[in-house]
Length: 295
Image (cartoon, rainbow, N blue to C red; front, side, top):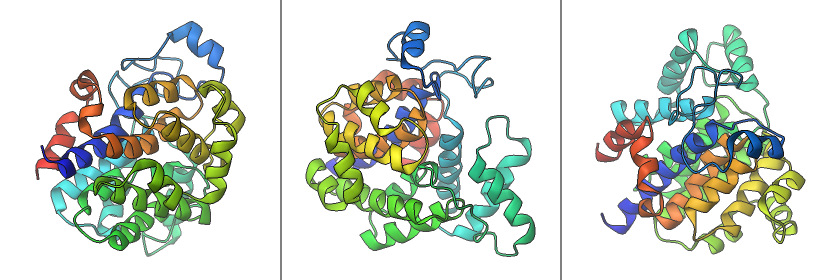
């Protein structure tokens, strides 16, 4: 595996593995309760009947990861990015979907009832979920120009999240992911591409342990909380992908969406080989990811 392939595979598997690792403890905001009930999360766990994902199994994706997987399967089959065509596939997910449906999705579905252009119904959500889905696009277009990756990432995000905050985050992740795949240094890339406000917030809690840092930044779904939390984790554990993913899970809150984003950054920076093999093997979507990478 050459270096670019290692980083492409790392970005993709990193995103999906970090999401899956957090799924069993997703949206638990009391970190003491999380530890008491689940211990330290080092392997995939089923979420359980009393969770937001009662039908999910260990190694599955969360509800945002499922949308990223929908994008991956579309690109794998169609071999091209087209927002209108993809949106038809995204819309086809929902009639029989058997997991949590977030607010941005509900709003988009409602808006599209009265919208002839299926790319223009997105919500005004400021949550990280929209840009968190773009790992397949970054890898798919990684031999194109950086600007093409940014354009596609923003298009994908705005299908459901049309806020300026979501657009800014998608632009950052597209730039960072593209540059990291092509060998850029992680810390230099974050300093060059991340929104300055988010970097400043992340650096303000850098000396704190992860649970306290993310509690102070905010463990919830909004970009205002989640993006600085991801940057904190990426900088704190820049050379240790495994620990970063575990610490993200243990910080609770919307660890799945944070994981999708964190996984892109550290997976691309440190490569596929930095992800524990057992996480690769036990990921339910592993075969789909391998097929995509080999197509």
